[in-house]
Length: 234
Image (cartoon, rainbow, N blue to C red):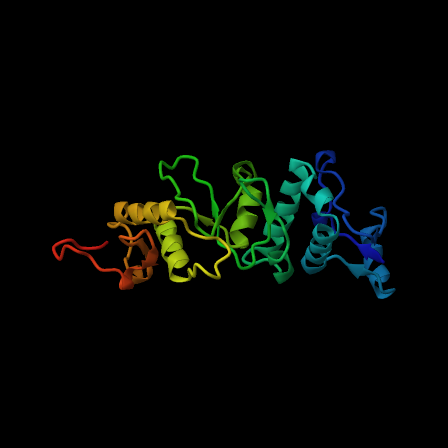
């Protein structure tokens, strides 16, 4: 379909490459501005942030390898357009698009996931076994892409957020049905982390934490007893 593409949805220089990532026919930019209204009356539609986002979503779904292998400048230009036009929230379709690159090389969609930015200056060691993801550092270093990731729900990773992730993991954990099993080492490391952060974290929900009993079995804290009555749990 023929479409009117405003300059704000076009590439601004040759380094970004072609932003026409779906099958459509852009109206020639040689048409004088005074003729655009007449063209619209003929049924030619104008690109909007919603149609742009929908085309981007379809492109990611159908040609994911091509999408992720685009140049750094191309991804920055896409993020620039989305953050400038969306401002406070992105179209719902993009929440389901694999648009966020991770530290481990994978790309994921934001919907239903807990995603953090990597803190390069942090001395905090994140324990294993938690249900969250970390954004690729290089991608999040660009201001536009970082702003886009924020719109998609990505948050800064700090001690409090890690504590919340630990408590949430344990509260919903079922050794029989959970897809990612906790090991004894993970459980112990989680307890150590929470103890080290006890002054920074509201300890509500701690009764759901998993502990290791004297027989080496993992159980909820409310089901485990201490031999020494003078020793207190976290």
